[in-house]
Length: 635
Ligand SMILES: *[C@@H]1O[C@H](CO)[C@@H](O)[C@H](O)[C@H]1NC(C)=O
Ligand SMILES: *[C@@H]1O[C@H](CO)[C@@H](O)[C@H](O)[C@H]1NC(C)=O
Image (cartoon, rainbow, N blue to C red; front, side, top):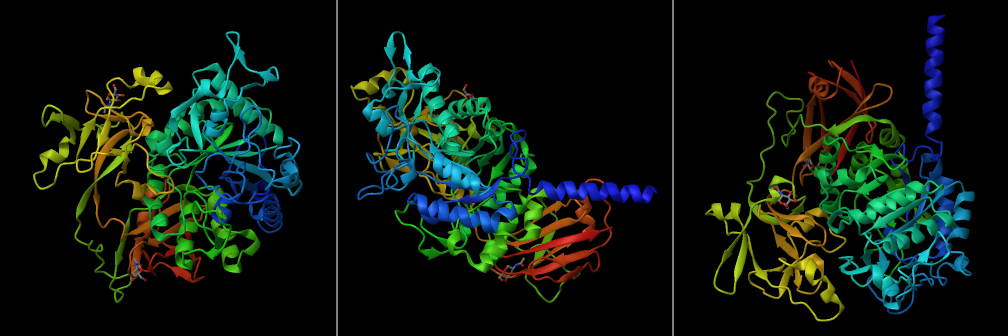
């Protein structure tokens, strides 16, 4: 009888967990699992049309929905006319309504004609059993600012008035906070003004009225941090009757400390720059992902539910190029090994899975990879997800499981200094000091580099701000004590506190100088405690010593536990040569609470090979950029 009831309980539990995989997100608890879906960016850049989007949604519904891929998301610039001269940073081609809000380009989105916005598209998407997402930018468009449109007060359905006058776009816009990678497109709005908040409210209430289920809010996080806007948008979404998932993008140079401010306000947030189909991009995710799992940020508390560090879309299959004016026209540059590595890391880190390739031309190999049942099980249901540090590797293939294992010797390390951004409260932000070279010239140096005789010091020169005498002088007061920083060899090149878009955090670390102009991205202030703070992002500059060859080598491993007690163990070979990777089974217990492990058996997922531990060791020969994934039953 006891046995009988236990198996009933187990059966019931099994049923609950299996069916929950198909339960759509309820409004009660958002993003219980890492969100899954398809996004148009990797295959269409900004150029997608309504017809192409709905064709794609239909295929997602037929072939991917059953695997949890639930969202279909239109990425950026859906309001831009696709005509000669229009491109991602062009100015003057956007379609806005009389309140300065973006509306879909009727040329590409014919169902929007007559003020219907995205409501018909959202209806069709919902009738396919899917959820509809859109990409939006920070603040307000330059086009609305130039037209100085009035602001809509949604509480009374007319123009926003305060102090006896109608408020307009120019009253709330912050031109000195233009989006650093789309300077002509968008700028922040001042959320300290009630009129600024009214404008943001008018946007998000309209998205809800259209039937939007997810917003991907861009140019407000990472190097482009605008915590005020994120906080206010989250507040607006929280008050809506309609559940809308809140996603932030991109996240170049984000650290867990920085992300802690936003994690509770959103449902997913990018932790890297854009990920494209380059091995360096995949490789750049390993360290940052480890840091977020160590900091316990995976599946934290979020807006009306959970919040997930997002490793970005999966650029597999038929794609376009970043920032291009073209639709899909080429295959992914990642080989199958590299794609498996990406998919395995994304799954083990419980990242949202957003497929980026053209679903209309998805090939069987790509389809099998993104619907791999083991990976999708890990992505939703695993726990204790973390990097597993206790591995060794060897290039000597003659001693598998052998006694003479020794860690692989690194290539002789050489270090380079590189500029990064970090939170100002972190100790590694402090270390800048100023000295006068002559009456006119002062330089600011990273003092730790001055202490090292063998290294050229990392220095920049101070350059006074040159204010123009037009409307911008109203900001002069805000910039007292602040200045630009110029390269020591090129005085007209200013240091940016925010990199170009579409770079991985790895690429950014070099720091960027660009021709000096007028924007807060290039304005800095030296605090008395030796921190150098950027006026745009509020982040501080730091100099890091990075291994020059850090990108080329290394083996990694990740571990997680499954809901039936199984252990998932992945080996990654990030090096340029084939390697045998070893883990001792007794070490698995070191990182898994309440387990003692003696021996394990199971399967390797990609080869289908049975795995038996010999001498208490699991080992596998892993190819260049490849991975092995074990599903183990241990006792
Ligand atoms: C340095 O001072 C600034 C401004 O007072 C402060 O925000 C920051 O947290 C301080 N940082 C450190 C490392 O002491
Ligand atoms: C990594 O792959 C390369 C190329 O196949 C191989 O030579 C090397 O032994 C592999 N390393 C590991 C740890 O498997």
